[in-house]
Length: 450
Image (cartoon, rainbow, N blue to C red; front, top):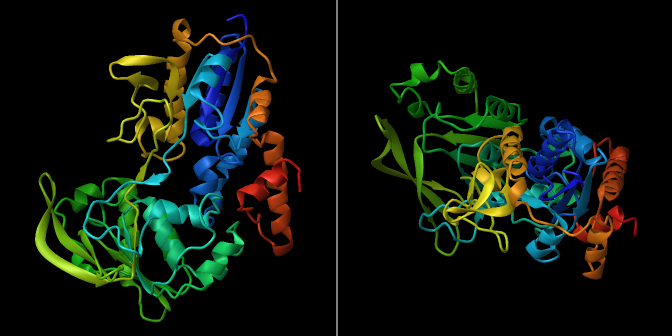
């Protein structure tokens, strides 16, 4: 390659930034040059690290330091507040780049098709997470009116949602939780949160770290039920897995605790498959069917129970959204691809690649996106014969195009400005930061237009 390779990345979360970093290093090792532009629909980068990780998880947010190094490497440009399919299109990318990597993740809730799931008082966990993380595109207020709440799911998101619902809001104050979220949680009348999983206590999908954090909540009793334990004949074999063994020990410790003195309770229900959300006009109860293990998985026992609740949160997984002019598998919620190379039916689409959750579905932790991106970059670099043929390079082409379309884009310098502004807002209160929530305010700070 004589002229620099030019690649657009749509999505500036961990998947997109890791892809940019691996691409940069791979091309440099081959003695070439690369120019990478990240397009992000939000005014700030980092995707689910900023808007999908609970505010009381600062350890996970530490990954931002590594991501920021990539942004400030000098090879990457960021164009934030740019909506793919509205502000910039496939035709624009074909004219300006050799190819594009889609890294838009998965931000919608996967459906749960049971009767009553659409009743008022029933919510998707992803929407609630976006609210408590200060996402600029969700309402500032959230209806927290229920005393008893059901959370459906046994993954880390389900535990995050349950913890945020039951935790006393003053214990969130040292974090970057937005002020409107604290105000909403302070008004919540919640006393009981019930978490339901269809598998047994050793078949959960959350990590030991997430589980331990639940047990550290102040003034919250952990309620477990003896009937849920000792059910699976394969329990001892499962405990050969160190992670499962730790989870088992944590749950056994909680079963020994004295309860009855806390003002709030967190109930963990296992072997409980959601059957229907009940209510006349709004949520009044969740009906579950007891399950049991079989040689081939799970089966229903025919025993049903109704738990009075006034709100239900489903945390059964995320789902990706289709992108304009890009192939999409509606059933799986991914861009169809082979090892990251986008496919339209049985043929590859020249110049188009995918990485992260939009590529493989919403499974795996943040760190898994590195190996995912490596595979995609290997495909891209082996496809030189089918890259797009862009116009001669013009550093001002993208800024000029966005300006002509009236897009108030944000850049890396703008993100640094917003980052420093949020930390300055938090400093007087001893907080890491106070997150700016409204999109227009984020843009004004980033562009220094206040």
